[in-house]
Length: 98
Image 1 (cartoon, one colour):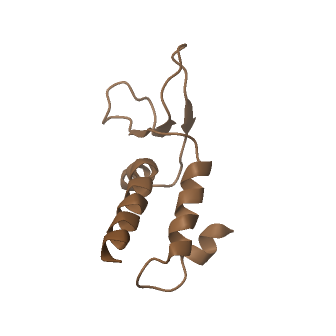
Image 2 (image 1 turned 180 degrees about the vertical axis):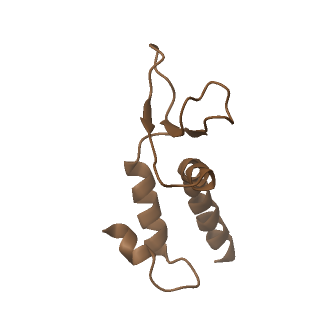
């Protein structure tokens, strides 16, 4: 699995790791991903991550997670939007340094 190589070692993120993150994000369902938590959002009856925007019928795809904290769920949803931005920022900063 591609993520196995991303977890090895420490220190600077390699170009290969940045490319792996880009591939993972490109393969995932288009965002935005939004975390909904029962009790936090008045209309959420359960904890789930909504994938992408609702369609014209008001339906959507979602991920229902079990055994994770609200913080983990929020992190997973936010990562869909933030990781591609972070990769772009790292690449831009590296280009400036060169």
